Each structure stands twice: as C-alpha cells, then as structure tokens.
Length: 94
Image (cartoon, rainbow, N blue to C red; front, side, top):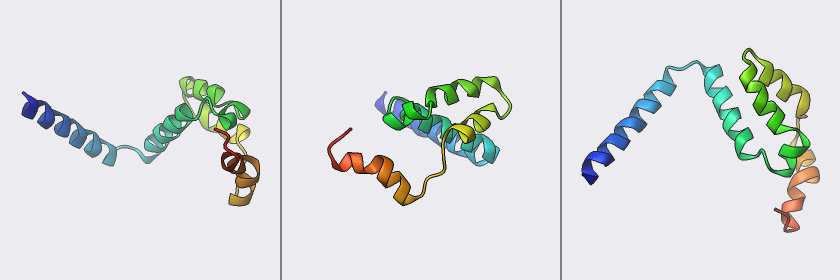
C-alpha cells in the first residue's frame, strides 16, 4: 500500500505542475501573492499594511485585490526595508 500511495502523490504533484505550466501567468501571480499574504498576515508588517484586508479583497473578484495591495503597501528598496523592518531581526525581535 505504501508504494501505491507514493505513486499517487507523485502523480498528483506531476499533474499540478503541468496544470501550472498552462495556466494564465496572472493567475499564478495572484495565487503566489495570496500565499505570501496568508503566511505573513499576522506579522508586524502584515498588520501595519492590513494584509487581512487585502486578503478579503480577493473575494471581490476583478482586480480589487491588486488595487488594495498597490494602495496599501509602499515600494521598498533594500536600504528602506532594512531600516524599517530587517534591523529588528538583528535585535532578536520575531
């Protein structure tokens, strides 16, 4: 039975990877953004920029999520994100 379940899992992964290759790039990017927002929703940066509100806008359809993200989250360069967020990690903050 272990062999069958292993083969089934590999088949499912192969199918998913093949489906992604033929998907619309915008849909793949949308799903990647959604996963990142879910993973960082309860972080300091997620709370500051209302990631939970952005996640709720995914349900609205159209490009509401994109507009909400664009209007909520500023563009960072390396130095700016270090000064505001990353230096906190070096100080032992989670």
